[in-house]
Length: 427
Image (tube, rainbow, N blue to C red; front, top):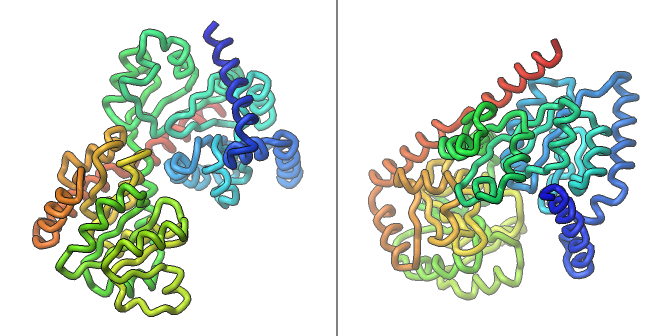
């Protein structure tokens, strides 16, 4: 009965997407991206087989969206390095992942994941016939995992994290637990996740490997881009960067910027780039500001104290120019990526509402590397104290860097397991 309800829910979801598509751009992209998907993918696979003149060994990586892709990226790239003759198939559920990474050079084939109906799953798995399938963090699709299981194709979930309030651990969650049991192996982020799984008799195929995002941000820090305008703007002045800034974040930060009496540069990267919103934010500031695009076009920035980033793709490298980081989103939909700032050892601030589900945020709070801010007064007090005490800043920075470095290595753990798995399978 539960399986019937699950399949009906998948059909209902597709129906709702179609219903919403005339009014919702993401729904339109979700549908359009799946039109003729099987035919396009079959053509691409046929072309690749003809070129290689041999059967293809495919490693399938599935990500829900962009965040999961960044989490999976180090494993994708490490897998390709370990198995250079294998082809990488990358699938996305959400347009916010596919549309941004559809030209990712690390994958040989990139497409949306067809809806998890029994017929779609059977057709897809038979078409790609992967050597191994990876699911990043969440994304536990019953029909796909069941088809992989029946075909004796190993399926691996990594960077997975569980919380006790999830359906898997409820009295009515048996069907959802059965989905987890279809996986060949689950690499969880922490002890708590492993304990929760053990409590539902899923433990023999579970390992604690940590979070591959630590490997990803380490890669970013190592290969950071030089951004001359940011370097010129900083000009050896203490700098606060606001990453993924929402209106609620700006409302707390703006009064401090306006009243702060000491030399301070501020870089603000909005969560979404809306020129009209940036203009309104500039009007609320009492300090001179400039947009990155203006500086790029030659406008003088020597007098500016606030730099607004009005493009995308730079934030992870911008953190290198800061001394402190405010990470946005925690007053609303959820805290943005704190690890991109942490990898540079920046003391971190964020809002006090939606952050507890992010393990790294809780860890950073525990070691004193991050501060939860409820209002401008709290922010001003904590920030000013750090600003005026260089020894304290260094102490906090050292703790953050030690934390990040101690969590690097998840990718290699996963690759070692897969290497042994494939070698064993091929014997």
